[in-house]
Length: 420
Image (cartoon, rainbow, N blue to C red; front, side, top):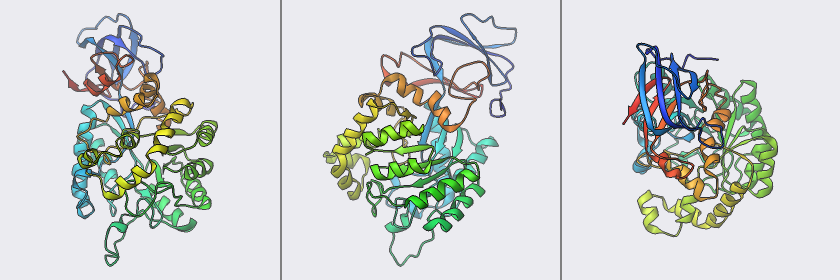
């Protein structure tokens, strides 16, 4: 096991938990003690004597769980400053990212995957990852996917929001197999752990439609094959059913959103073993309130987003029902950044359950299943040999999932960052 990310200077820590869930089991396991050394879980048992000099943390009034994992965030994006957002520098977006990381950690997220650097000329999420590694800033461990690769006129072509006379350069735009290979290789050269691309249009952008497929099958195949050659998995931003099916056939590891996938395509996703990150608080909840102007005003939504959400709201709600009935492997993602960081990402749990996903499936999606998706074997569960990423809540999320919105103890890699 690689324990380089699981280091603590405290020799021994004993956590005494009133109730425990390990990230895998079908129900809470009851009272347990957890012994941690060097940031790694060494033992879990009903009663562990504390050795001399050990730090004992009393959580007998709380349930202890693995640290949460958010598989879909945008650290360097904010809806509150959308009118002027694209004119801000990479330095400013780096500061936004540092702020977001602190918020995420305090809300119990000990690992996150950024799926779209919004510094369109530089590599800000790479810089944030370096700053975390050097202890310059605090936050969850960060997995990055560089910029979201897009065709011109597609979902990530933000030059469409500018005047045609600006002639702005954007480093994630690629058309045709040759250009796609170049952009994928550049993203990996500058530190991308994953590759992310836009397979369809989206709701938040002005120049595309969420059901329109924006890459050909050949282009998708080339993108995934180029990433695979360099040992990088691929995530695809997708809404429409055709684009979901094409991306799955191309070999992506995760479908992001998949908001209008059909029952047949969900069955294909299950057959291929592809992970599904539904981001329902950002999508399905908006469909539910699509006709409320007050909701959209509070969200600061653009006219284009309001129109598109109202057009497709029924299909989004129908797909959410099919997802809950399916057996696809659901991983937790919030789309924070598209949503304001004033929103606690744990609200995604409540939305998932409201849409028919069981609490155990939602919780696994943010722990063990998310770790499987991200290929991070050291996290996502509480077990000997695992990294000591541990949170606690007052209450039982199997009975009331909303208690996940009030994490009051956070430990990452054996270091306590929050304790009520």
